[in-house]
Structure formats: C-alpha cells, structure tokens
Length: 86
Image (tube, rainbow, N blue to C red; front, side):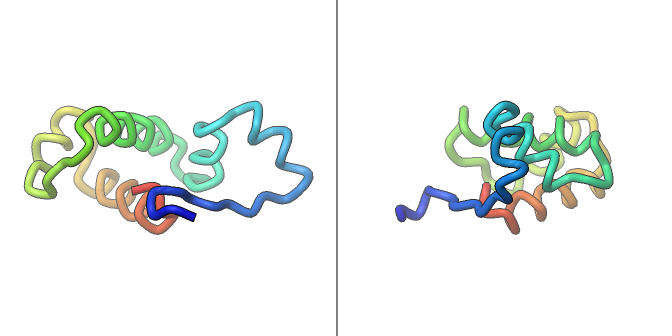
C-alpha cells in the first residue's frame, strides 16, 4: 500500500451504506458528536486537495475562511490526522 492510501475495515452491515454515501459517510462515522464538523472536514479536505500543501502557519486564515472556532478547527484537524486522511 502506498503512503497516500488509506485502508478502512468496514463492518458488513455498513458496507452498502458507506458505498452509497462515499466520503461523507466515512466522515459521519468519524464525527459522531458534532455533525457540523463533517462539513468543515469536507471543506478542509477539498482545500488540501486543491492546494496540495498548506503550511500550518495559515491556520488563522483558514479559521476565518471557514468561519469556525479555533477549537472546532483543531478538533477536526486532529480527527482527520488520526484517521490518516491528512
């Protein structure tokens, strides 16, 4: 498996649901407590995909751009890192 690939183990009963919902389905499994973070995670991942690389020093600009609190930004980023998506 290449460094840029992620391997998820999915329970059989969730397989069809996840295939239908794609990335949003995976994110909804990661962010179960605060569903607002699913939208933020999608925005962050699309920003990273578009720009390829974002310096960590730009966190203030991203917080302002996405109109979220620092706490939500950090929480979302940590979960994405823990899942291996970032």
